[in-house]
Length: 94
Image (cartoon, rainbow, N blue to C red; front, top):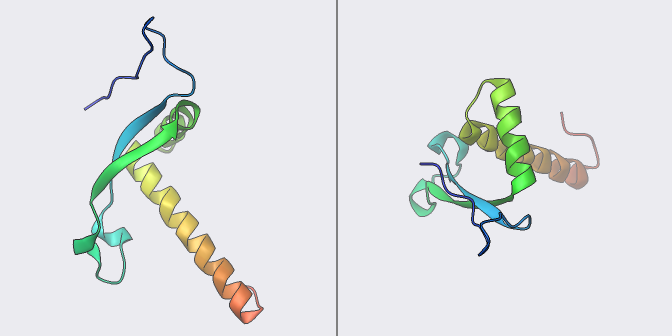
């Protein structure tokens, strides 16, 4: 369901207003058997410009916005794990 962009009393969208997107995570992206304690969907607040860019990139890739956001989160988690491994061992993660 498409959400309406909040507007001020003059009917103009506030440039600082954020949109809420409902994002569902698949169980494949969750780890350590904690799926029962993690909501499968939540409100994600994004600046309008970020949401617009994400929609364009997802469409360019031929995937849904939900899938695009899932991939972005998984990629970020992976990079942080690699950085943590690098810092703890003093060598580059492979």
